Amino acid sequence: MAFPFDILHSEIIRTALEGEKERCEAREKFGTIVENLNGPIDIDKYENLVQKAFLHANAETKLESIGYRVGRQLVEKVSKEAPKLVTELEIVKFICKDFWSSVFGKQVDNLRTNHQGVYVVQDGRFTTLRSFPEGDQYVKESGYFLAFPCGLLRGALAGLNIRAVVTPTIESVPSVKFHIQIQPK
Amino acid sequence: MSAELFCLTYGAMVTEMLKDYEDPKDVTIQLDKMGFNMGTRLADDFLAKNANVPRCVDTRQIADVLCRTAIPCYLGVSATASSWTSGDREFTITLESNPLTELVQVPPHLVSAGLSYSQLIAGAIRGALEAVHFKVYASATESGANTEIRIRFDQVLKDSLPAGEDD
Image 1: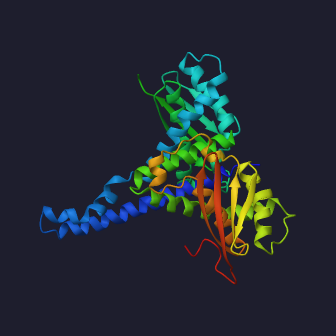
Image 2: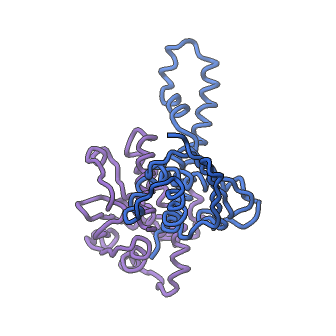
Image 3: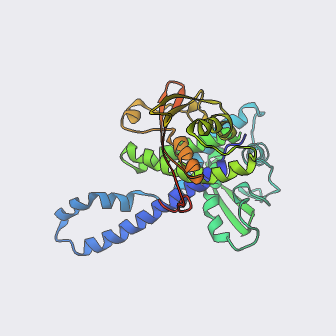
């Protein structure tokens, strides 16, 4: 028995991209309407359109914020049995070992730090990119498949009281480097 | 852990959608659509994994495969089919415990406004059956800890477009 997480994930991405497309269309339409407007009163007629054009965040932001929420909840479950984590390095190590293996099914391949708040985590076979063919053909598309995991990591770190910015770099699918930049408290 | 990741992600996604759409009914429609798309892909996956599934000739057999094999395979819970009406064309699948709702509490005002939290499952069933040329209508309702999915059989599709290309 296995929950079809990959299929759900790609469906969420599709929906997010669709939302973004709608938003762009609404913006364009709004732009042409504004030019032909007679006065500020007319704008009320287009309230729906205005909301659509300006409310939605872009696809990556949306995916990231979903991930953040999930990360915060998941880290509590994973760290329930863990020994007390004191230093920043301990926490990042915990994320790379225990959290990573229970969420993504394997440990990271490499963890580096400059001891000044920047960590680089390398995963040579990242789970959400497994369905992609190897190589650099789909590097651009794979960005959408990393927004959710980035949020997940940021949420997990936030749950352990570390504020950080997480960004991915991909040179060749499915190998990913996550840059974790710790923010001062 | 895959269960928790799946269910929490689903919950976070629904929360996000409720922010985006003003009407919870629109969220239900969107969930149904997502389920449908997932279902068409799951049907392939399911048939690849379960080679011994027989060819279904009536709705009782469809219900049997859904309850005994498909739902336990992807949701890890058992299900039963009951309430057969209109000459076996309609039936209800009851999930004894729904992993999707285990960690959530859907506010009553959203339910009465038309949000059907588990519509993803109903959509997936609709999508999966459409992929094997059965057209059905499916809707999900929560009743206590149980989730009921009402399925209405419409027709056997003949020579149709590949599933997923006609939405």
